[in-house]
Image 1 (cartoon, rainbow, N blue to C red):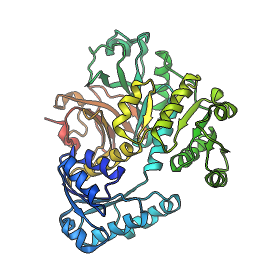
Image 2 (image 1 turned 180 degrees about the horizontal axis):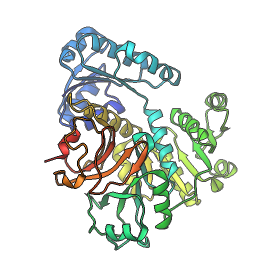
Image 3 (image 1 turned 90 degrees about the horizontal axis):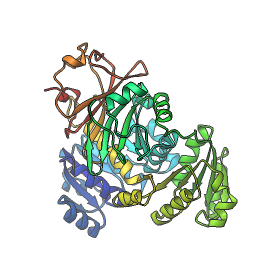
Image 4 (image 1 turned 135 degrees about the horizontal axis):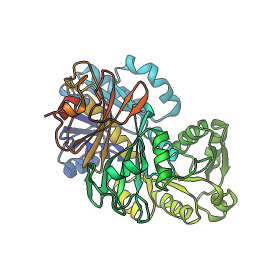
Length: 450
């Protein structure tokens, strides 16, 4: 597909990096010639220097042949205006970055009139991702399917875990849960397992099921941590604001530490159900005074990766059970985890995954049944499809379908309930099917069949 990315700052650059992995033809536009040159040389894409709300600039970038125009500059109004103009000049679809909370609230009502197909808010999406992780305090990461009716939860398996050395079929018999091990990460390898696969120490396993069943399974394998009731957020920027709202709506007692006086005052007014403290969240004395040791979760969201990592590691050392750090640079996430911090979230990567998912879902006219897509270390994907009445496998037992190697049916959500499929399970129209696959570029459910 032909994609135009407008604005190659931090978010735009991450989008380029992830979208070229999908084998799209990417063109970038930015007013900064040095940024354009840097991205063009680094990723071997095409580029135009200029203002993307000028007709001639968009035309020189090939907007009339563009399948997508993705506007992600740091100005909301420019992003929206660019998308409106791009649509008028022939772009098939448009995506805009909209960060302002008040502006963002109105976008649902305005989207259709403006010709926008999708709009995104990196800070809100990051806050939602963090709030999902906090539902499972013992997890490294959590991804959701079918509006939260099913989850894929990432657990680290330590040496003393009772499932070490056991096959998946044995684990199923002994623990008898309505969950499935969808993927195993072992070192640099990512494995789609089968019944004879053995769990080893230091594996990272991805468990698929509904929230209650995964929590029960975590209890049985001695990995359950009690629900989070109190949370301390360090940094009251946009992510901190959205996260405080999310957590307060789940009846979690939230305290936000913000060092800028004016911002702290704004947050106090905007977050009536949270406590806002004016102070330096990187100060050991302030953290002690605000009860760091007694909080269930600490989330570090300052504007500096280094501060977030250091405070998060300190919180871990102080005995906080669940610690999450915001790390803007995706390239350092691996190093951060090796320092002993299990959960780190990159807003850039969160948004890149959202955009890749949306673009993949519209890659062909037959691909509109993709609902959700997650990439696991660029080696395995977990994709949610909606079964249409034209799918050839409708009303056929799974065991009778000729499913390609490297594909696992991870679960089905039907009538808002999670089903762990067996060979006798039949797909029905409207089912939400979770497919785990090592095959790249799957865009439609029919592609899982030989």
